[in-house]
Image (cartoon, rainbow, N blue to C red; front, side):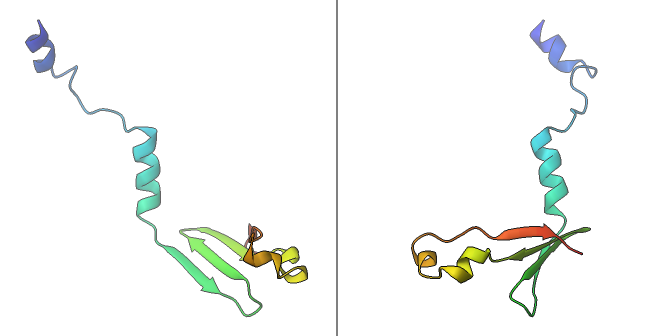
Length: 79
């Protein structure tokens, strides 16, 4: 009975891609490009998406805390 089920082409057809494999294929084919900008920001592009990243204001106000606990960067869509 087991061998009959393994040989049946209806049961062993092409499987639907998993969520993980779809995410991996969507991310793998596009390179990530990072462009430094004049005012210290960075522009990160991937395919059609674009994000501008810059330091948080607290990093400029209190630079001594940055050595112990770096503040998170702020990100926003490209304009």
